[in-house]
Length: 331
Image (cartoon, rainbow, N blue to C red; front, side):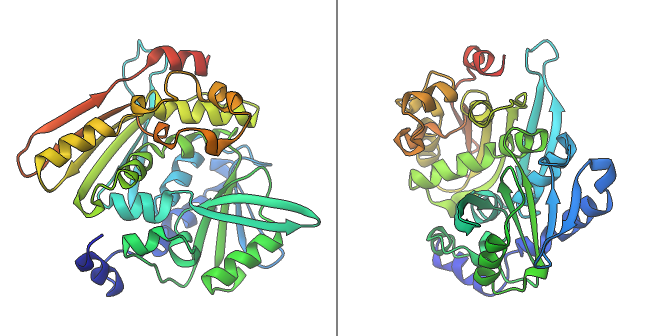
């Protein structure tokens, strides 16, 4: 972002993502029984909300989990499109603060690794606590840091965060453990499936960043992706949630600046520009023998993109929905 945006963040003009999620977190705690989530207090006093490990969770738990990931600055809805479609149910995301909500909060960029009784516990943290405690260089580019009396972190995990992880996050955030809340669910759960599919807008923002498009030119955004059926194994579940975005995701960005830049962004954003495009993600993952970093990073993009240049009113569209690959992946 430019220096003007940087100054605004420093002066507190931008919203606090950790403060904004507090009503959502409280509602999940108050409605734990109906949401089928389990709220417990960890050994260090941290609040833990299990959305899909021992708890059953569900689609609504995942929807709220996704709104927590967005730092309380976005809305996630479950919708129906063409009822005759094989996969008619969609996860739709909108935020009027796309850069802060998606990159400053939702993006799973906080790499955390601790020793848990002789075993490594490795996770990628997402959600608003990143904006306080993560050392990612991305925050320097965003010109955004949050200050709040409490922090909330979301992790994709098949067990509760161990005490060592809680200690590490508390230290990084400079908060006592009892001021921390952790939401967690495995990728294979219903809640995990929803909150990952709800990253369809974030994926577009991250790709725009990779393409060096000026982030402060992205004014607003909306995205949708088909709701994939959960799968029992991690690789299959990861594959389906990625495919929902790569082959079924549709995004519209509203941008300021010159329309030629809007057109160039639209042409470069879709996933079909990647050399790895064309097969279900689980097959691609198997082909590189599980080496996630061997996959072309340009693949992680929505299938279809519309970029609207606000100055001229013109819209530029690129990419396509690939129903054939979706059916191979989801069936």
